[in-house]
Amino acid sequence: MNAGKNSDKAVQELWSLCGVLRDDGVSAQDYVNELTLLLFIKMMEETGRDAEMPPGTRWSELLAADRALEAYVEAVRRLSVADGPPLNGVLHGARTSLRNPSSVTALLAAVDRMDWFDEDAERLGDVYEGLLERIATDRKSSTGQYFTPRPLVECIVEVMQPAAGETIQDPAAGTGGFLIAAHAQLKRKDEDAHAAFCGVELVPDTYRLLVMNLTLHGIDPVGVRLGDALTAIGETLPPADLILTNPPFGVARKGRRPDRGDFAVTSRSSNKQLAFVEHVVRGLAPGGRAAVIVPDNVLFASGAARELRTWMLDACDVHTLLRLPSGIFYAQGVKTCVLFLQRPQAGGDATRAVRIYDMRAGLPAFGRARPLRRSDFDEFVEGFHSAAGAAGNHTAAQNANDRWRTFTREEIARRDDKLDPVWISSIDASELALEEPWDMLEAARGHLARALVGIDELASLLEASA
Image (cartoon, rainbow, N blue to C red; front, side):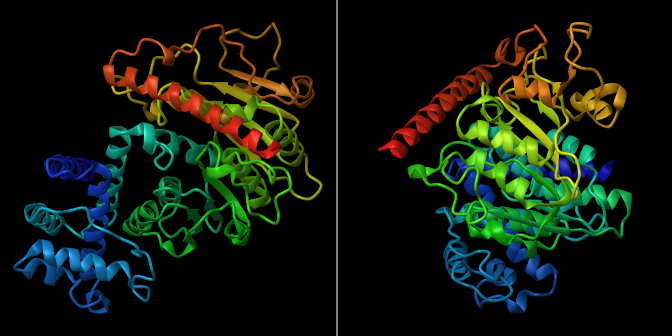
């Protein structure tokens, strides 16, 4: 418990420093990018590998420099072009936004004060991830795509039950939240348990955060790659026993379509959310299972989305769907859900029924005034593996306010393979009772974001038909 309190205190101290640096024009995102560079340099010293660093980039040299800003800018330049060991291109293209010598001095002092590799080896990793979470909370309208809130991640990992020896993948890894949570779950079961972690991240700055986050949590980042899983890189990933992912959604820029030789269902669509679902299905080994977060339109849209749903339902056992409240990591008004599926062994059954848990209708609005907590998922977790919790067909005899409902494959087919039934009469409270002005602003942003996605989709269709 003390370790957790110490981590929270360290996060608060470093976040306060972020506030100071903002006065110098340094954004929260830039601050963590700078901190990533410094942590990497410091970590090389702490692990006795600073001799492998290019001259002028070692921690001791930065501390001893008379002109801290000039020394740091030059160190970043040298690291940004270093491709060989120990960097192997991780910091390629790195840059600094610091322009004030006092900012560099403050950051060097803050990192130098931190305890490194003490008796709680992963404490620094928790501090680092805590900073990432603070940034996501600070501006979740733009960061939800790479930082999924911890309560949701913990819930998903708990019900998916990663096991020792499995290959665990995230094709849109972001800052590594799912991989780190799976690793922690394995360690809680058995300190000596190991798994093969692999993944892909598209954005170079986010990839650096990913590599640092995995490293600080004791995970070898050798299995994660910089690139796009919707290209040939995704085909080269090893078959996964478990895929956990929150991929980006929307239309790819300029209507770009997946560049995958193994894609057939979404090869003509520029909708990223659809293509990532196809990747998940094709990326699973026989018997492999997956949890993937998708926007609601995957559940009901026509065209390529409908074709994808039918293929997915017939190729896999899509056994559970968790309908999430809006506003928990994307902006208010952006609705998402979690699809849980398993690829059958040879001769195994595909989807026979889908259990849906509605965590949206009638619940309190989640936002700064009422943050999402792990306990909010207790009923879902309890019912996920429980026959009693998930049983029952969609009949009038069922309790109208029961959040669990089961729909047979035949019922779904009669609905044109749509997976968006509504049976709880209460309206979505997350769209109402927004007490904080910031939450109301986020709601407006969310509605605009949905409108822009629709415009992009229309533009893509027009371009395709031209």
